[in-house]
Length: 501
Image (cartoon, rainbow, N blue to C red):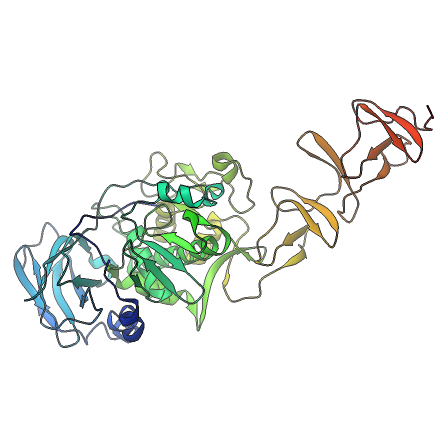
């Protein structure tokens, strides 16, 4: 996932570090004061209007900007705050702390927010683009601390492998910068925890829309095909919304990442999140991938997947096995013919390709088709659908086992006192299997034999013995029921009638 921003941390520069969890819980600033569904439906017409005559910055396209200004120390809205671009006042907030700027040329802008009695807050390189509808800002000013954020910074796509998520607390201190906000996501809410211990608790919709805008916005001119329509952008953003939601939910429920269960960082080590910026299309995409109180996620065999994603491919995605050594059924290599960037890989290459998805969207694919292309044999389903647990047989006759969280198991599992072996794709095995240097025999129902003889091939009278722990005997002599038996290096019993010493 692309690292497109950097929070500038110093003694005096704390981005959003002074949120009061109490005030935000009471006022629901991130939920109702920043934007609502009604705001989107009425084109943000309830925002205070301003217009600009700034030079075009090389673009003839014009867009609108809406936003809200908050007191960073209390979370309350700020009336009569001044919004500047290039030292020119372009808007002031109304009694609701809101502002709207009409007809701003497409480009990247440096914003300054000020009010008497407050420190000046600066937001550099924040994007405005007509292709994505109105830009939506949440600006913050503080009486105590200056606030500075650079929206665009070094692009580095280094997502960890699934096996890296089990970091110890000591590892977490090394892997997470002190400047990184960390986010805890539950089924009902999202929480960002900043280094000083203060918290912000916006809604899940707020979180997803701000991830989409951070992950997908391409600052360089011409990154997306010029022919892409608003409807095609919406499908691309819907695809990222479902993938981002699935990834977040899976990680916080399955892994102890960064030393704490239920924690996600706000950088591309997890997925990029900027609570100060989103856009109209990202909001619509987030709301468009819900059904009432239910939300769409990616599933495989009825269970939520680990929806890894990356920037762009090189004609094909990579399998999880080739990159991380884990053969995961839904993370296989698939074709990626329409990557708009071209060239070599950018990112780990496993799962959903963002620029490849843009190419599919530009050709008219809807978000569900895009997602199921990149995750093999997957579905887009409502998250509140019944979670599959225990045994499940698929149409091809294969059996799978899911734990209490709906996670498909691989390797050895113990059920009702019996041991079973599931291969790397989760399929229950029968007959002989090798695990490391040892061989085991599994009955027709998958249960492991132990302390028993097995002829192989069946009816051949070639006898093998499975010891008490299930391991096949080989290159040894065993005392079984008061008789001794010899076994060669292949495990074949060379003295099938036994003998005494």
